[in-house]
Image 1 (spheres, rainbow, N blue to C red):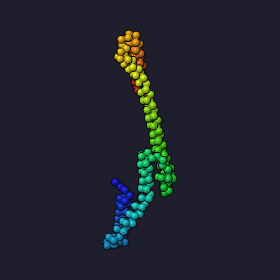
Image 2: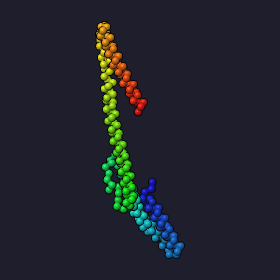
Image 3: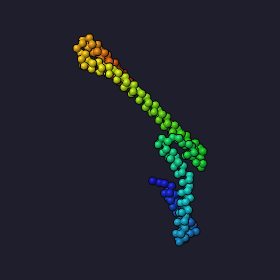
Image 4: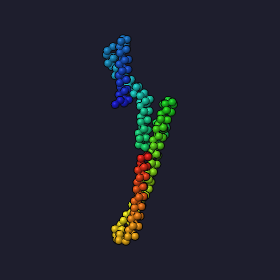
Length: 185
């Protein structure tokens, strides 16, 4: 909403009006001269204030915002020179550098932790999938063998049903352990 030009124009108008009103009431200016001088005083005040604001304040702020935008885009390899200028006081410079450096370090640590958690999650899911498939495939194999004709042999039938039950019991134990893990964490 407010940029350096608008702020400079407002300040220039206030300064020019103040200076010319004082000069008018002191009797140094008459009305015709006031009309001619007013735009010149506004222009000079505007240029002085604008350059001061741009150079001392807005340049510094824009550099900081530029760095923050780069950080938001995950470009965190930023050097101090990119957001510091020689006219900034040393104390302010150090504080801004420390703040940005702390922010960047914190965000990088968060990204690294998320990457570690993603690797752990993938490995965990791969391990769980493998562990769940083993008893399922075993039980399926035993049951399909029985359905394909081994059911008539009582000895094979009992042996395969016990093995299928054992596989399914192991599967049940794994599911219960997973549920326990999800409740603990």
